[in-house]
Length: 139
Image (cartoon, rainbow, N blue to C red; front, side):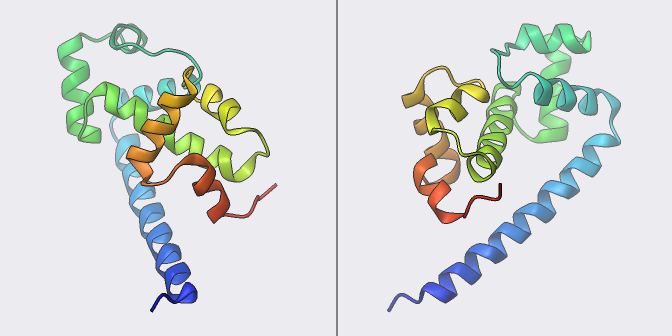
């Protein structure tokens, strides 16, 4: 039998655990200057197309060093890292802004609404609309 209170408690526990892991990851990132620079650049430019060449130019490093940097610090490729950051920002905006989902997708660099939904669902297990309904607006 489904118990809504237990499900919400489990969801809150998972959110708290995720937040702890995220904070721990940020602390580790700030210890590595190039990784912190990459993180800052990506966060500031989520709304535009970011290629490997853009990231290399911003950090003044080679493609090989960029891949090594992201693998070592973020345990993924540069593309996966940018995509994760876009989804994290989209989750934040979905909860805190009363904007249509397609606008939020555009704000975080997804020009194609259907692709945004596909990537969001793959990363979170939920569509953006369903994710938004799980949380009340914190305006």
